[in-house]
Length: 99
Ligand SMILES: [Zn+2]
Image: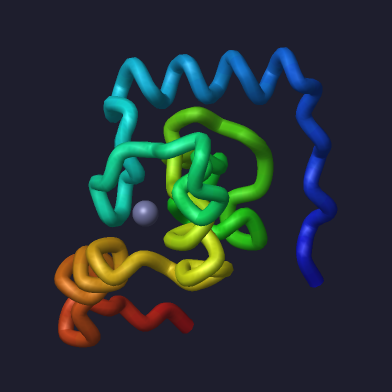
């Protein structure tokens, strides 16, 4: 069961957009294309890098700006770089079994 999303005010959303733009630039985090207000699929959206169902809330450390096209394509999936990192760190031979 997923955690319901806490809605943001227009001001909170604008503040997060400014913070993320200052950190990552005016480009989509995933495809690196500039946002274009006249192209709806290139409109900037807030995306949870680690899906909201795993890391709920609006923590700026887990947010990126993404174009609508990339945000929809990613959906609720874990990004591949994160999957590779988890597989590298949590190799089965490193697992400890506890009784
Ligand atoms: Zn994109």
